[in-house]
Each structure stands twice: as C-alpha cells, then as structure tokens.
Figure 1 (cartoon, rainbow, N blue to C red):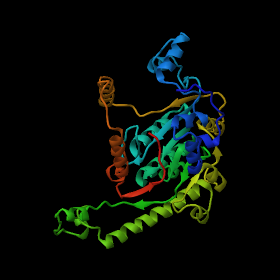
Figure 2: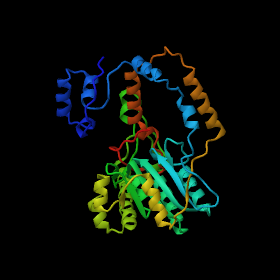
Figure 3: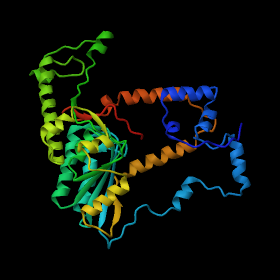
Length: 373
C-alpha cells in the first residue's frame, strides 16, 4: 500500500460524468483505491491495522460511540420560562393511520401537530419533511391540522430535506413559509389511482374467478380484472383529486389555477427551480427554517422543543431484543450481500402494493424521488 499525499478535491471528484469516471479509472489502471486518492477523496492508502497502530502510537484513548454520545449536551434546550418552537420530523412514505418512525402516518403525525396546538407555550411549529408522498387521504388530514395551527395564531414553517414532493408538497402548501436545499426534489403536483389486480397471474397457474353479487360493486376483487366502467368511475375521482391539488397550491402560494397547472402535471423540480417558480419561499437548512419561524412569530428569546412519537412498551422491548440479537450474532457469520441487495430491491419495488393503504386508492406520490432511511 502507498502513503502518497492527497490532491485537492473538486466538483468532478464528487460527481464525475461517466466519461470522466471512465478516464480516471483508466489512468489508475482500474485501481479504485488509487482513483479515490487521485480524486482527493482520501488522504492516504493504508491497511486498517496501520491506521489503528498510528492512532495508538499517539496514545489516543479509545471510546465507543454510545459512550461518546452520552457526554454530548442536548441538541435543543427547553425552559419553562421561554416560548417554544416545536420541531416535528416526518420521514418516509405518507400512509393512512398510525405509523412508526419509518413512515408518516396520517393519524400519528396529526397527533403530534395536535400536541403543538394544545400547548400554550408553543408559538410556532417547524415541520422537517423528507418524503416522496403517499396517501392523498393522509396528506389532507395532516394539512387540515396545519390549518388548525394557523387558525390558532401559531406560525408554521416546513423545512424540506432531500425530498418533499407530491404528498409532501401538499402538506407544505398549507404553511406560510418554507425552506429547501438547492438540490431538494419537490413539486410533483399530481395524483394517480392504484388498483392491484392479479387475475392474469392467477390465470397462468390455472386459477380463475367467477360468481354473482348483489350489485356490480360487490364483485370487485383483485382476483378479477378491473371492469372498464369502474375504471372510468375511478378516473373521475382522480381528476377531481388533481383539481383539488391545484386549488390547495393555488390558495397556499397565492397563484392562479392556470399558473399552478403550468408547473404541475407531476413534474419534479429542484429547490432552485422551485424558488424561481414561486413554489418555495427560501433556500436554507433546518437552522434557517427555525430562525424563519421565530421571525414570523416575533420571538427573540426562545427554545426549540422536538415533539416525537412515543414508543409503546412493546416497541421498546422489541427494539431492545433486536439490538441485543445483533450484538450476539457470531463474528464469523457471513451474509451474501448481493442476495441481500436483491431482496431489498424487490421489497422497494413492491412497497406500493404492500404498504400503501389509502381508503380510496388515491396517491400523491413521486416514484422518481427516493429518500435514504
């Protein structure tokens, strides 16, 4: 291994084009480690034991991450004497009902907003969203709770993370001001309907479905093909949902329906584009969003109070069991990474069918927008 010094990092190092990547790998004879060094992504090329030996020679004291984390002060300080800005995080698909921390539940997320509404000490709310959207029903339920906060005189700001599109934008449109990164994926003002049918797959293995019912609607089942007349009825609901989306954005952004439609139709925009189009107010991070909320609420001296979903005793027990189970796994246990990746790819591709639960089958979802969980 070499201990050569690194070169300066640049934009091409972080995000090269395919042609640049090909040329750089050819220059390093296909050695990806040398490529990383030449690109400035690493400082030296050393085996792990030499890195550890170098640190030990400096007489550094080793400490695990959990112990280090326990010494850190609270990220946000809370005082009963100061007004509060509530901070509520939402990440994952927007689903109906109560959900865990891996998704935004229409009921569970609304309950967090309701806590902020009922607290007289909370003067403003910052919602941190990282979502490609999901259930139209759940999105509207959350938006209604935001409108309740505004009616009570509390300022609401949405801070967009990497993605706040479709259902996420539906929610954000109810706020007075919101921020995003220049690279945030947002917009995706559109809606679609989903009806899963497995009749063709069942037919291939010799399974057919037939029968009679009291009405045409009583025979609706995934085992049969969707009746074209019923598809037309569903389309009427989808078209109404799209017009409602345009109206929601029009009212929230003080734009005409024609102006919204011109930049809607499911198109996805970056934060930079969204600002120039009038879809967001500011470009900035979470800290700037909190400052914006404080300014809107005329607060100079305040504290930030995170509001989170409380874990049940059952969830806490399962978390503890799973954590200890990983710790007790044999060191020599080896899993096929390619197989695991394939499994998660299949899981992600089928999530629309296995996770989505809108009562009408209407979804505000951006299939091109992905978030890291």
